[in-house]
Image (tube, rainbow, N blue to C red; front, side, top):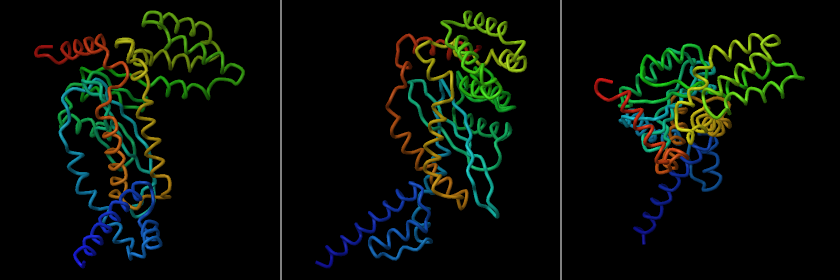
Length: 317
């Protein structure tokens, strides 16, 4: 009987430890988790004990962040988010996030990097780490227009294309247009990126330019200068357009991360941030590991992407 009781207690402790990790993942602080466990079960779990339990996660974080990557990624998305992180004082720091779609069309979080302010040098280090871990053949990088990011990406992946996020560009233009012109101006912009092909997109841009340049010269010039990287998606099979003309996939991921982090007014340490992000990343990858992103499983799309890999990365290319 004593053996059964001991076994039951052991199972309860194991369940509690798993529950602690799930509550922590959900955004509760170590103090809140300890108070909840004590109220429910009467167990004396101090904040220090809770922190020690969740620290078992850190044993997996380092190996996960250094795991080998696949050689080929058709798409790599880059985006940063900011969290309030406590060191000696509380300050906003960046979390660099990288998501990729592999050769088979599966989307995965490739890595996250916590700390500092978002910068082109920070992204250069991130990209070099991806390359070091094996991601050597990339077709397309999708990200916003952070100054210096394009140069950093091309330095590490000179044979890859760059697609600047059209959604970011539209959102950046929107506040600069007068209220009475907003609807018409944005509808005209849609004729550019919703055109049937690249040539018609260029024609549409010149129509927009002719109509609006005198009234909004800076905005039209900005679009014209960035047009080559805003229209890169036309080089790729049309069935994957929705997946590559915007960085929305990684933006949605950021929103999920923020939900988990929001209950904490500030994160107590880099380790705490890494534990939460890692647990979310693991759950995301398990969900998507065997799902093919729409359009990537199409035979024509697969053939065209395979041709791009061979043209850019075969020996002597």
